[in-house]
Length: 345
Image (cartoon, rainbow, N blue to C red; front, side, top):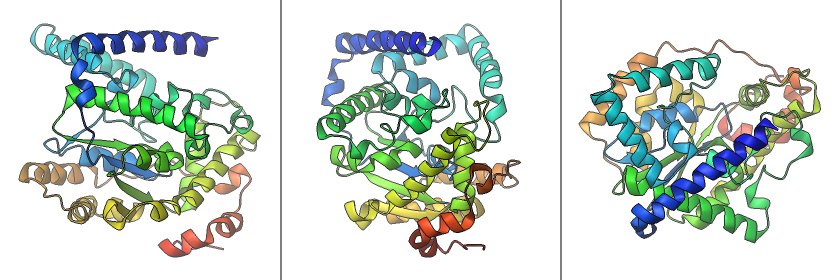
């Protein structure tokens, strides 16, 4: 009941902002989303880390913060800027301090899993959840095994795919129009593994960055993260279904290289990103023929120094979810061998 109420309220407010766009920001329709960048990977594979590092290149990229993703419209971005100015110039930071307190209350327990906050760079999955075409809508409910329809947009009928992607493009245009119309849209979205063909159909000049992490680590971590609020045993069917989705995502990534040119696609390993973030990003820039600015390199160096001692305190095992290393290897042998991931049994 609470979900239905909040969902309906969100739809109503979203409609209000979209109507405001038609009155005050009508030129959003003229925006062309050129060569957008999508960071894709299995969940818990370093996408957030890479996204937030690349977002430091503010002269090149425009990206959504968590607050933006609730209502991806020009009007909401305008309200965001107005309230930020009022907070800084008149209220002496009261609003930002309140949001920081709310961040700690709502997301503090996730800091070592997936650091979240209203002013942190975040994926745009809420746009798909708004259309009920996101696995995220099942996070509050332990019935994920019963409703698989939202897992792979690419497998949906063409009219459904077109409708979802038209709405997504509209949201991106509205956001970019006010947030940075002369910049490249940068998105990271782990759930877009199941919709990358749809993304390429809508944005044929898109660039995709894919991060590969050892399945023995990412699959149970994925299942744990998205079932954290379930009060059911690890062997519950819904938790097992999340783990299986992680395996299915790995399988589906092999389709990426069949659908995109080498110039538009860059593949890297999670361990390489953690060991040398700055070097990894320089390789990405070289591949796509981007020239990093000195300001960006300085920010990148500072951020790398700040995070060099990071180590997750969470450990997960496949066995928690009724899987074994041998089972996973048999399903993902080609992928694991390609990346040089040890089978460990």
